[in-house]
Every structure is written in structure tokens, then in C-alpha cells.
Image (spheres, helix red, strand yellow):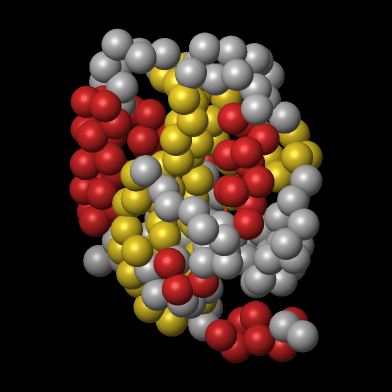
Length: 185
Ligand code: IMP
Ligand code: MG
């Protein structure tokens, strides 16, 4: 039995369920990218754990790279402004890029990123997100691979943070609103 952190209201996916979701995603990606030039691009830091698990479920050859974009700071909603804080190491020329994200929320970050990466002459660019929060979408964007949909709650664990904490929780949970509501304007 997983012990729940006192700041967590509800566990949405436990370790076993997460493993099953990631296994299925890896299987699908491995089928789709046979004979391709797959490059997994992890968006730091939230996708760190998902990336590490997903790449081990992928059975076709793949390279990895990382980038980091400006985050929400300590708030729980996006400012709408996106900046690349750490860029990729290598060129995307001829690569089949698969962006690996932790969660697709408003979509502002990802739509900016997909546009930015598409301009670098890759063979293809697709999006793989572990979680999707469709109710919150502000721009028209759909992921090509979605692990699971979540309700409009603030999610932590399995790499996802609130103010940099809770990333190390092995499960995906909803944070109690009282933990962040006093910081919201
Ligand atoms: P978007 O631009 O609103 O789609 O925001 C995407 C990024 O915001 C994600 O990659 C996460 O890092 C962060 N984010 C959005 N929703 C949550 C959440 O519920 N918990 C933790 N981080 C989140
Ligand atoms: Mg992220």
C-alpha cells in the first residue's frame, strides 16, 4: 500500500497503474517509429521521470535530448509567456522528434515549443504527454500520445511539482487546494 503525503488529497494513479500506462505508450511508439530516426526530447524538469521510464519501454533505436522552458514560478496557472532556458545540444535536421511532456494544460508552452522545434528542419515533430488536462486548454493543440486524462486539479508527483516540491512522490496525486490557495491572486 502506498502511503499518501499529507498535502495530497487523492491518489489518481499509483505506481502499478503508471507502469501499465507507460508500457502501453512505449509499445505504441515502438511500432510507429520502426525504421525512423527517433529523437526523444524531454521538457525539463517535469518529464524527467516519465522520460526515464518511457525510453526503457521503447524497443526501437532512439536518441535523447533535453530542453527547459520558463515555468509558472510558484503559481499554478500559466503567465502565457514562454522562454527557452536551456536549449537542445544537437541539431534536429532529419530527426523524427518526439517531444516528451509531463502534462498538457493550457497548451501555451507546448504550442510555442512545437512551432519552435518545427522550424529547425526535423523530419517530423510529434507530441507525447503523460497527462492531459483537456478542460484547461487555451490554444488548439492535441497530443499524438496521451497517457491519461486528469480532472482540473493541481497535480503533483511522478515528476510534477508545486513550487519545485513533490516531484519525488512515486504516484500521481491531486494537491490539496489549501496548500496553494493562499498563494494565488
Ligand atoms: P501549459 O503551457 O499550461 O500547457 O503548461 C504546461 C506545463 O505547466 C507543464 O509542462 C507543467 O510543467 C506545468 N503544469 C501544468 N499543470 C500542472 C499541474 O497540474 N501540476 C504540475 N505542473 C503543471
Ligand atoms: Mg513541464
